[in-house]
Image 1: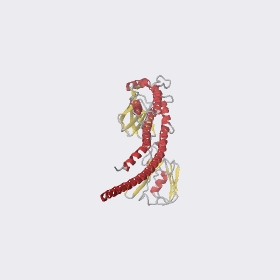
Image 2 (image 1 turned 135 degrees about the vertical axis):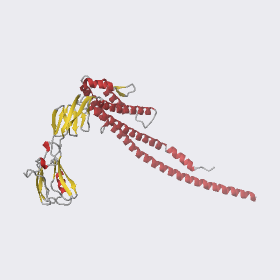
Image 3 (image 1 turned 45 degrees about the vertical axis):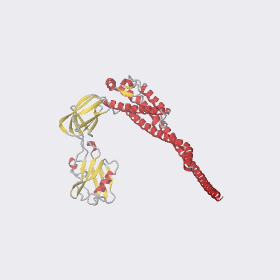
Image 4 (image 1 turned 135 degrees about the horizontal axis):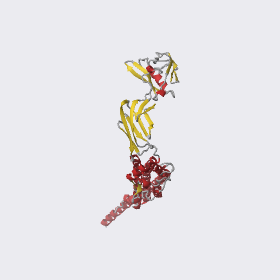
Amino acid sequence: NDIDFNTVLNALMDQASQPLTALQTQQSALQSQVTTYGTLTSQVATLQSAAQDLADLSTTSSFTAQSSAPSAVSVSTTGTAVGGDYDVIVNDLARAQVTASTSVSPDASTTVVASGGSLTIGGVTVAVAGDVTLQGLADAINGTDGIGVRAAVIQTGTDAYRLTLTGSLSGQANGFTVTNGLTGGTGVTFADTDGNGISGDSAEDNAVNASDASLLVNNIAVTGSSNTFTNVIPGVTFTAYAKDPNTTVHIGVTSDSSAFAAKLDAFVKSYNDIASFINDQRTSAAQGDASSIGRDALLRQLSGSLRSTLLGAHGSDALTRLSEIGVEFQRDGTLSLDTNTLTTALANNESDVRDLLSGTDGAFTAVSGVLDSYSQAGGFLSTATDTLTRQIKSMDQQIQDMQARLAQQRDSLQQQFTQADLAMSQLKSQTSSLSSFGANLGSSL
């Protein structure tokens, strides 16, 4: 029978390739572990973000504010809000000054309106050295630091363009004047009603005069250079949008624990995601999955550190443990939030709840600190990932070397089998010739 040298060659090479296959399988498992660590790193970042939100509650309030007319007066609360009712009447809105040129240019970017001199706006001088168009003058004004206005070119008709100057800030204190010392070109002029050589100092000079907001809050007169007020109602920021002296807008500030609950819910969900992830990794490892990181001591360390921090005492106020505000561990190791307990704790003493959650000695300041050692550059997670990456890179070279050796071995065996096949073919041919010779010899006797 003929020998199938290809079958023999493939069988030998399969046997010789087993160490390579084992190394490739190991490398694939390590690559999967890197991906898994990437998932854990992302989950830790999400958890840390939720912890940091709880570590800083300066803008979080247990009160909510409602406006009866949000389009006229909008409201929001901060951490210092207290309950109350407020009636707001907007007699006038704060405005920024707008002063427009009285001169008109036929275009914005071609006609030279000045070739020298200067324009002084609010005491800040804009010098012109060379020909400028209306748009070029606007650009020069906007490029001047600390000038306090925004310049724009507007089209007011067919072949009619004017320069407008608008105050960067609203309010009477932020009004400005214009002293025109421009020369050459077609010229740029501004209204000067009182003829004193200064524009903007008379109401008639301006398209809009700078003015303060004027409101009544619970029948108390309130004024301001901005339409946003932060210090009138404790812990409430409100913004006036519409002037209407005949309409009263009601602002109600009432107790509401939803902002605290939302932040705690986000943390609880993120924590439970990590707990579920760690549990799944441990199960996979127990089933012999080489791509799992379930046997890594880092997981046990992370889980233990977070649990002990969340169960521990924090601060020295009346509330020192998270279970006292409704954050508790369940039998399966997950966290839960009892919103009724949280609401009661906030109603009894919001300050103690804040101190427990945030601040220097707060629970979530501590949690964030624990997570720092895992998430930061050079932390446990990046170190573990870097170690695996180095191992994978090292295996790349080993795999290349083994593949090269196997290729040489295959070539050598191929040559040997080719020669053997040739020798056997020659032997078979000789045997056939001898048989033929013997047969012929016998017939001649």
